[in-house]
Image 1 (cartoon, one colour):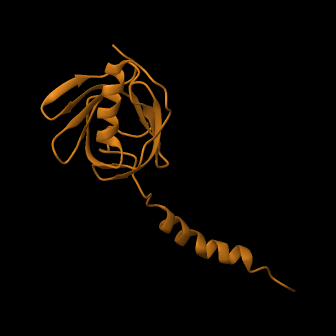
Image 2 (cartoon, one colour; image 1 turned 90 degrees about the vertical axis):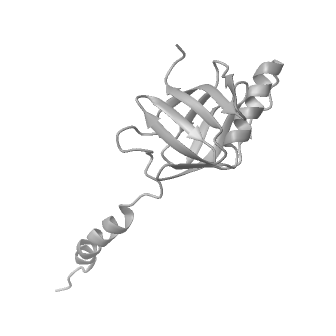
Length: 148
């Protein structure tokens, strides 16, 4: 009588496979209480070199749970690879559409794109507000959901 060894091997290897796969590469959260991923964040303003710039209504950010960020810089849409580790949010190179808008929207877009693209920022979520801060102290202020 031949016995199949495959089910026994699976029973023995399943706990090992689960243990090895249990720790994700990124947690999807800046804090356990308020997740960063899976939330549409509306960009409220950017503060750079001591000056605060209000965001156009279209400016948005959504960090997916699988390592991609998408959104709108104020005129053009973008996507970028993103890595989360503890409170660090690292954006890869931004890929954007190439529409032209008014000068004020384009200036904001250049500012926001320059702060996000290819940078590591510190993320802090508190009561539905997200702040992404560069190593130089410039920051992007965001809030959950639709414009007020």
